[in-house]
Length: 69
Image 1 (tube, helix red, strand yellow):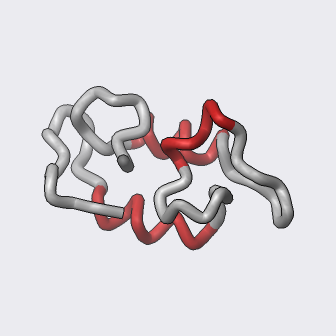
Image 2 (cartoon, rainbow, N blue to C red):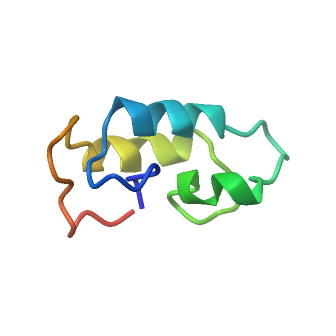
């Protein structure tokens, strides 16, 4: 799931999309940003950041398919 743009890698583009979906306290994630909710709590917050970083592969480098949020 951290491959938010679906291109096979987890990179800076995915992080930009993640940032654009960041929610404020009390705001529920919008359907278009569901992929950025890495821990499944209906919010995109700082608790999702370590999950993203653990799965980071870099541009053009295939993401580890076993990396699970």
